[in-house]
Length: 88
Figure (tube, helix red, strand yellow):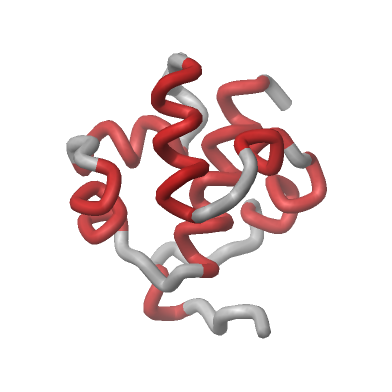
């Protein structure tokens, strides 16, 4: 898994944990919705500033966006956030 894929999948994982659509997350980060999709698909070469912005929006440490365990779990998420049962 590439670093871009790792960060993208972790971004998706945390977005689902907060029960946010891509549109809602875009509003929270001030990123365009298409950029959110690019990030989550592992195609965005993010700057440190953007990684910090993503982490801050979830109130997590940036290092958590590089965790393989949650990235692998994100591969099994449904296509839409409203189909996901949030972890407790």
